Length: 290
Image (tube, rainbow, N blue to C red; front, side):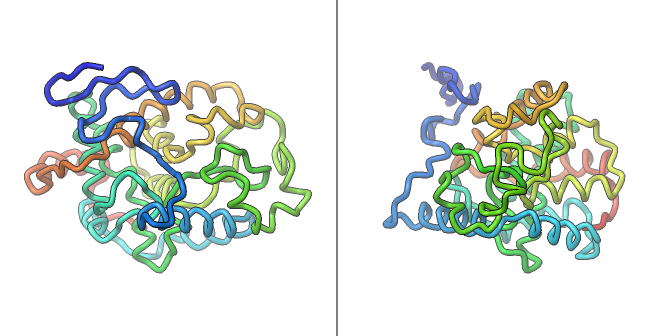
């Protein structure tokens, strides 16, 4: 370990290999899901995941997809939608207890530091959690936030809180869904999976619906950035197809900036708006439908 410019350079994690971690939180302390009933944040996180895992079925995903892909909930510019995130604190996140817009700017600024000429990557960092606005429109947080996983097949042990949190999920007793492959074919490909409903899939659908002109890898970063059991836990290899290793590399590249930028330092958001508004106007101008 060494320190440079107030940043600790850690030895690579065997799981995710972050390049830099801010000094107020070493990488070993991220994603700590130990159960502690006396810690209000840990208990909030546990309750959120247990409710998600109890209720997230194939039928529920179909229901939520139909509801939210009508894109009739509100219209807004990207800036106005981001400002709404001032009112969202992610109840599944053990690493930060600040409004989500703070994390958005932290992520974007770290990407900007390393990729000063890649404006679309910076913008992905800024908007990647924008789908969490569902929580402001009567969607419970257990159906908005947290790690994602495929529905319609058996749940893997590396999902947060493991098998115990799924014990009340009815899909667990359904022979169409409770086997290794479930409703999928071997090596069908990650993009063929029906993912648990949440902010990743919703924002991905919003961007497609509004014909946003991002490169495909940008949309993939959005869609799978919470799929930790796959790209961090190395699960679901039996469902991967040709090209999915490259997809995993793309999502892992983004994860470095999503996870390891969470710290107590709050960026000067007002001062940063003009820079990011120009990028928004380039890629996602005007009012879009959510």
